[in-house]
Picture (cartoon, rainbow, N blue to C red):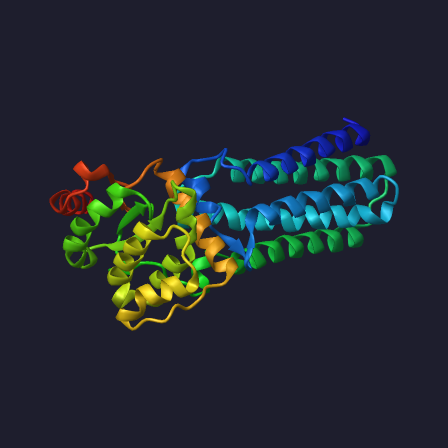
Length: 335
């Protein structure tokens, strides 16, 4: 195989990696591993953006290396650091998430194939030149190893969920292996009907499970209530249920409430609305969408009870399913 053929193959692989990185921005991949992996950030930057930028930089340096030989070492360093970073990502999926994202695995495969072809190309070039400075070879190899280790270290230290930044949008028993996801819409009449059942058993459920109330907007106007709801969920946990009831009552008469309308509705509870940042709201809504995709939630109200250890789950949909007895039974069934 000639060096030119290797360059063509490497270029095609780089484009493949770029396409996979672009696809990771979509909902094409709906496996559990995809939904979970896409919630993670590298120092606050989405992994989708990191992957896209990586392959763009790699493509540019490869192109420049065909005209300027001084860029060739930069290509190798980029590949080595990428290989280390992908090792950290594979560790995350295998040992932390415990589920695989096909797109992420595909991207890792592309990076390692590119590294393999780069090594083959280096061997072919050294044979053509018929000279090999052992000292230079050792120093270059050491530099690539350092780049790979740096890529792994930076990724291992920097990849975290947004929640790790301090936002806690859950109630109940923290650290429980059982989680209860309550998907609802502020203008859904059935959601309002099942609220008494949820309220009645919530104290018992909170002793056994972690509970998350999730916005699943079916009506467009429901988005008007999301920032207020998320603020109460994060900042007003002791009074959350009362505030939730106040929002549902407000939604009956006003589908586009102003800040003053909301403040008036919650005033009897002695609560002042604390605005979350746009980034916080966006990240939490992205998490909610990922959960809805993972558990195939298309309507409201829906309650999903899942054991994160055994992966057992139970889904309750609609007013007939979501009763106080069924909620308790669902939690016990997955424990």
